[in-house]
Image (cartoon, rainbow, N blue to C red; front, side, top):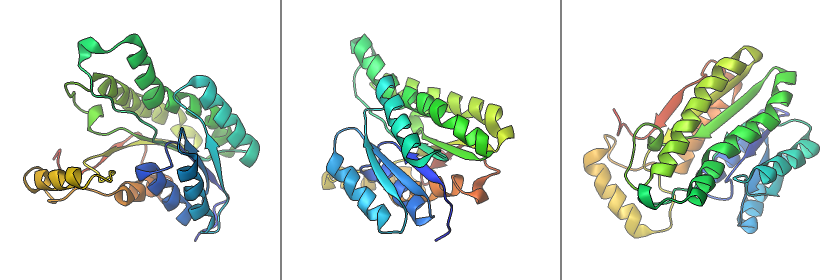
Amino acid sequence: MPTTNRTAFITGAGKNIGRACALDLADRGYNVVINGRADKAACEQVAKEAQAKGVKASVIMADVGLVPEARRAAKEALEAFGTIDVLVANAAIRPDKPFLENTEEDWRRVMGTNLESAIFLSQAFLPGMIAKGWGRIVVMTGRNAMRGYPGHVTTSVAKHGLWGLTKTLAREFGPQGITINAISPGVIDTTDDPAWVARMQKVAQTEIPVRRIGTPAEIAAMCGLLCSDQGGFVNGQMIGINGGIDT
């Protein structure tokens, strides 16, 4: 395990893709801040697994979809570690609701969790990255950032916004040693529902060229590369980890 003396802040890290990213980064020698909104026990378990790999790990429970909570979480992380060198903006909600039925509160909730959390956490952590001349930001977009899906308008708008954020920050902060990239997961096994998995595996046989669905570990592997020194020439990109479904 390399010694990095760097710290990563991962939102939505109590399970699935966020958990896998946190543990992959811990494997690479990064200290990790595990952020979650509700399931503290799950976040603490991830932190325990990370610590077993020989790194420091802490849990900060906060609903980063609310700006004051995001700022509080960032403040606590900076107080604990000095700087945050890596931000993985993974937290997301994906409600299914027809466009005409979405309320102002629906829009605010999805924009806050899916988009604004990445914006305000980036604002909090970028000054430390600039001071060090090194930093990594990875956001999770998905196919919603490339196309529209009926019933998922709030998610699609937010994820398109993340893609715009990625391209803009990459140009603004690339000269200062900081890269910003997006990962677009395809169909990933993130559920305990065997019926859903079976249904998606069946779909994969005709729609996904590799004939299977993906795993959180495969998303985490790309995240780990983007957050490494070896990934330093990748900047402002949205990388599809989807088995070729959009080829």
